Image 1 (spheres, rainbow, N blue to C red):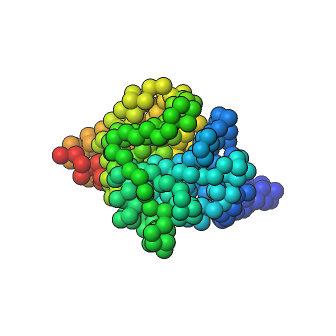
Image 2: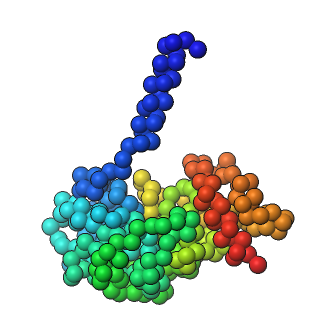
Length: 303
């Protein structure tokens, strides 16, 4: 290799290493980006899971509140969109990157979630496959926990302000809420469809590998008048057709792992053999550690 070629290669490596070593953005309203979905519906990205901001005649409903430290920046960012106060938070599920901002909400804010999420949030269970995870609720006793729950379906408001919450069974966790804005034909699906890649199957919080695809298939069929989905971590909206494909992807992973169990292989061997099929365009390769964790969960669930 020439000296010039070596220098170019070293420069490229240096840039790559610096990119990997970049610190996470600090909690700040400036580090949250706004995407307008409809005139009264926005998505705030950054700082954790995607937050929906639904501006109604009575105030603002937030769906999910991001990582520890991002609650106040989230409230500050909402003030740049509307003068109306935040009156309600809906948590799609229990995980810290979707709920930690709850503790920064004013005491008057109603916090709504599935009954299982309420129990999980209070229990502070670690996320399966991720090890120890933050728990701001231990450091802020009595703050940010769920104040209103539902089991199968809950309707809040009416007309243009209506919100429908649905539960279709275990998937990412045991309390995944699907949050529909029927007048806008939009639904927030949280991390049941986080992005195009291997989802977390959090058995510690009631999730299921075996039931995952069935649950999200029920959600697509059960809420038919939806054009756009707000996902847990995607950079842009997806569609119900994308979610159907995602269900196929999850189902193929599960059935492949189950076939390995039937063939007498260990769950680690099954995970190591898994590769994302080429037909799933744009899907990220599976993280090996997560694949191992979720293969073990599928083995335990498969009798």
